[in-house]
Length: 506
Image (tube, rainbow, N blue to C red; front, side, top):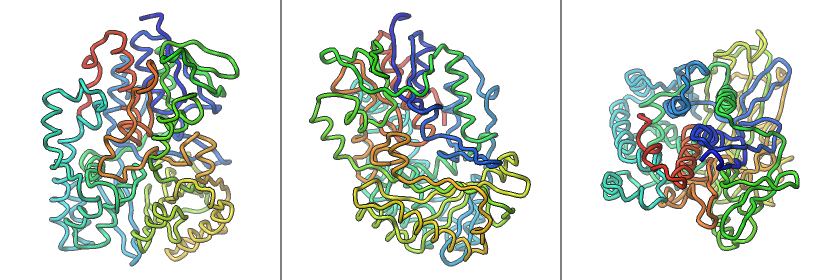
């Protein structure tokens, strides 16, 4: 075991999670990241006195992180401080009404009743429905490599498969949410959760209603100091386990010896390896890193990419108590917004605006008289027809006008600015067509179409990250690294159940 070498491509959370586990199990692990620092889309930017997280902004299922540290014989609380977020988010609707959401069930029910008196009880019914989906799906879809036939055929998994109709896969998110709530504002609020994995609530299966349960039933958290502190902690943990991390080193090819991987080529030099754990987007990997296998490449390129985004990082002079830590300013026509994004692949005329302001809870992230605004808008994945220079100007003007309507006139108070488009996501993170969440979930068979963690074309090649099973978001990406590491260890004679399974209680 001690002589088995693993080359890990990319420094995102999935690759890092897998690398830490493999090193802990005795493999010799070398990780290669093309950028100057690790973390992938979970990044950090400092503009003058303003500091920003540029990726995920809310942590759910923190027990996944706790379990990784426990696996490495470490205590997460020695590295990271998780802080519950309340309110989880402040929502602004087109009719000028607002609501603060909470993981406190009584508080959330009361807030909903104030907004729509007839829907307070409906929320409780909806949460019970979402919890049932979670109880049926969590182990098999989150904690199990479902493409591994032997693992899937276990009795408890078979029982779940026979009850798939109970996880509401045949309706869309929007159709099922509409069954519970009468108020269109609440329907729009709960439709939003399909975007957490880059999908369209008017197409994605209602099974994704598991997501609001994870947030409201299990809670949302912030990491003290910023979400990027998670990357810092995992980097420290990786070094402690003996992972060799190489930054500013781009892997150019995955080397093959017949039908098996033999290493990677980076900076023109071959680095031998017995296994390759690829954290790069699975579509990009087959297009650029893996020679041959045109049928597999064609199949992957036919999968629909997820949402992309446009981001404005704004260091703003002044304090704005109208806004919370997390904020959503909804468009007036959600259906039209998603038709433009997914059907027409156009920048929406009126995009929904998300604003995260970590200086609300971490004062060091902005000057005493300022705030750090991370502004994200849903965008289509890249096509040749889009003209991002023009769209940036139009969307920026739209956002500033919309904020002014909410008595947030900030145009002349922006002291620092940095902008990202889908083109930047493609170039910085090698994401397929600029998508943020890998593959979209806009079909009833999404869970089974998402690419597996074990390559079907090359022995010794495994995948982690948001573009493969089980999906995007911090906990799922880290679980993909767990699954890939487990499969590699199983290839060396360790029983898969020794590491993967319902160890993480959520």
